[in-house]
Amino acid sequence: FPTPDLNNNSNNNNNNNNSINSSSSSSLPSLLKKKTVRVVDPKVDDETRRKMIEDLVRARKHKGMTPEAAETLLKDDPNYYGTMLLHLGLADGMVSGACHSTAATMRPPLQVIRMKPGFHIVSSVFFMLLADGVKLFGDCAINVSPSTGELAQIAAASASTARAFGIEPRVAMLSYATGDSNTGELIDKVRDATAKAREMRPDDLFEGPIQFDAAVDPAVAEVKYKGKKNQVAGQANTLIFPSLDAGNSAYKAVQQASKCIAIGPIMQGLRLPVNDLSRGCTVSDIVNTVVVTAIQAQAGKQEAARGVVNKATKDHSGDSSTASTSSSSMM
Image 1 (cartoon, rainbow, N blue to C red):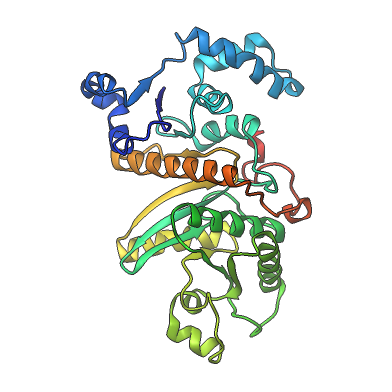
Image 2 (cartoon, rainbow, N blue to C red):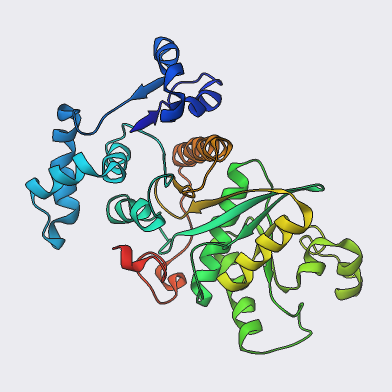
């Protein structure tokens, strides 16, 4: 189970992580001599595993976890081993999924790492590398039908992710109507979620409900808002879809129509960064995801150093106190 040394300040680390695939094992000796990669085998790393057992038992004792069961998990399941490396501070981020399902990848972090303060769901974004710039699309992979509070959390987490990558978030809460032009259950949910997101992150810009064209096209925004100045309309870079059906369809449609690169899904909401690869991933997918995870780890440390605390409260969580509806079975 390869663990990138994110504490090393060398800028070459992210480029070299490409070489930790077993298919590139011939390059490992030269990398190890440079001390850019530490390779750990969970089955033989007895000393580290012994440190992990007690904490894993403590975290899962209410589910009947025993020291014997913990040792077996840590030997046989690299996702539990990687999660405990994070938990003990021996790694700063985790990338998995090339050989495991999303459920197998995310279950251990949800059980042990748990959520950031104020968040009760894991969500995701895709970085869409479009011709006119980078846009974030969320949630396109995790939450099927988010409640008002969950939609607000997705928006707040996505704004935080944008900032971590040097993007000043202008967040559009998408719907099939813009502003006060219409009403209805779905539109009102987006409107209420927008208000909650603003409470959670008062220093960031949120607008909703808003249609996609009004969110990204200044000419359409001018018409829809009747000339009123708006800091998001026509210039949104972070687009939040009201459901997984809408978000997943939209990101695939945009990717196919524009032939742009889509990096993701990038997970958000956990205390420490964990990202899931597709089992059909390429080397470039792995490298991109490792780089993203490293940046998330660095941003998390910077926020902790500044004492940043999310302003979300329990009542923003919607209906759930565990990870998202579609992920709760992992618990």
